[in-house]
Image (cartoon, rainbow over all chains, first blue to last red; front, side, top):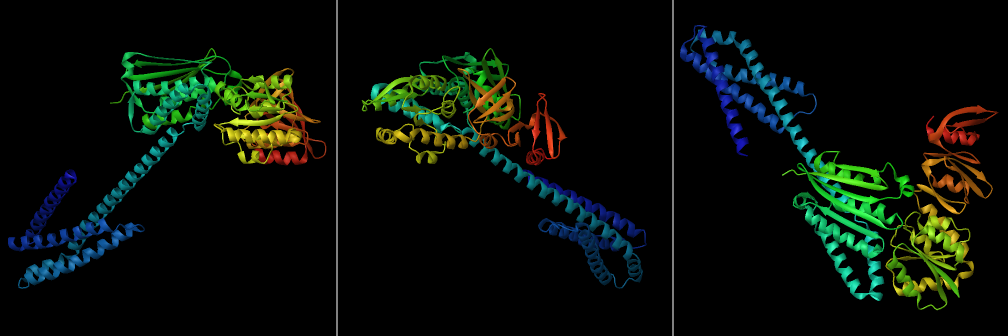
Amino acid sequence: MDNIASSKKKLALVNAIWWVIISIIHSLVLTGFNLTEAQAIVDSFLSNILLAGATILITNNMRYYLPRREKYWYVLTISISVSAIWLLITRLLLGFIFRSDDHYIMILSRSLSIRFAVAFLMVGCMAMISLLWFTQEEQKMMEARKNEAEQLTRDAELFKLRQQLQPHFLFNSLNSISALTGSNPEKARHMIEQLSDFLRGTLRKDEHQWSTLEEELQYVQLYLDIEKVRFGHRLQTAIASDEASLKMKLPSMLLQPVVENAIKFGLYDTIGEVNISINAKVEKSYLEVTVQNPYDAETAQPLQGTGFGLASIQRRLFLLFARHDLLQTKRENGYFFTAIIIPQIF
Amino acid sequence: MMKAIIIDDEPLARSMVKEYLQNYPDIEIVTECNDGFEGVKAIQQYQPDVIFLDIQMPKINGFEMLELIDDPPAVIFTTAYEEYAIKAFETHAADYLLKPFSKERFDKAIQKVIHHQKNVPEKTQAVLQTASQSLQQNHRIVVKDGGKIKIIPVVQIHYLEAADDYVKIITADGTFLKKKTMNFFEESLPQQQFIRVHRSYIINAQLITRIDPYEKEGHLILLSTGARLPVSKAGYAKMKDVLGI
């Protein structure tokens, strides 16, 4: 706000200086026509005060009413009529003040056309400048609104992407608990605790929030532990991270869907023992987390091109960092590797 | 005495069904299966009266597994997925249990099977019909190839040819048979890619290389694989419509 106030003051000052210069030139020109100094100054002062008033009137008018159609005709018409009214008033006032001086009256009458021309130019320029200025202001406001709307859409999209927690995971886990209550109540209770912690984590996460890798890995571990209860006989997991990477930050709930995806293709869709590993390391100013899972070449084939359902993660990374190269995948020896690269922007 | 098989990829889910079945001395669990492949084998071997079947399983899902069985037994689906048209199943004798399910709900399902046992196979067929139609995203077809099970991604299909009660599926890997109708495939395959150009042929539109006039009002199509197939008058109109020519 201070900025706007000071720039307004500056504008007023520039405006005032401008009018003083115009007035001086005006009076100098008039002294060339054999008028007394007093006459020249009064004439110049009166004319230019009125003219300045007219331009301010036009500018203010434009501030509240911006013509939409035929704007150039509008500028022309308003300039001609304001200049004409101004000419009439100055003519009457000056004619009244110096009514006893025939020489002055004659000069005044003869200079009417040139006075009108100058006034028309001034008013016209001012009207034109105001028109452009306020149109631009309006556009800026529209732009700001548009940006805000886009931001909102983006927030909503992020929210939706994050909310895609698979409900079948929840129901299958509940089913496992139900099975355990009969055979192994202790284990059932333990799994209820794990599931509660996991769900609490999901609810608590805020999409704008960044967490340390340590927090995110704890959360992922919880998820994997639950899956181990369901598939314990065939799921092995390994999480490795170097000390430095644990303190690095990443958007919360970004790693989780990558791991869910690895489970989906590596565990739900394969037969036999399965190894899923997560590796985190620091590369220059980036945090790089790689998730490795086996996949079934035969059943995964029809899914080629959809990139193993990682499109939404890629989208989220793009929304956050405006980069397309932060999610990388490769296939090697029956394993699928997903790497997410997080710039450390603090 | 009834024979039952439990097919589910989660051991705890299987143990749950086993526990609930303890109250039924007349129902014997002959075996348990981890996935659909094992399921197909076990059903052929034991000819069970009823199976408890999970839908989401590795390799092939429960519906695909059922398609591979000629005389399917009564089926009680046990799944966490609600989206497979539950309404449709409620009208049939075979039941659909949403995990986790209660003992009472399980008992009800068993009662249904016991009381309707005689006409259950037809009902299962009806269920399957509904299921395949509700599975809108048919990305693949599962067929039996000798003793093996083959998964064919639909993009790999060259064309389909009618053959009595079966449909021949021609792919780069060879020709496979599936006991379905041409109408079924015409409806379930992606409409933009597969066109029924003739009463007996559905072609993969991406493989069309040439269309020539043939005899009076017919056409002959050449696929990039070298196959030449007839196009009927109606088929030609449909093809023009889909391809936008």
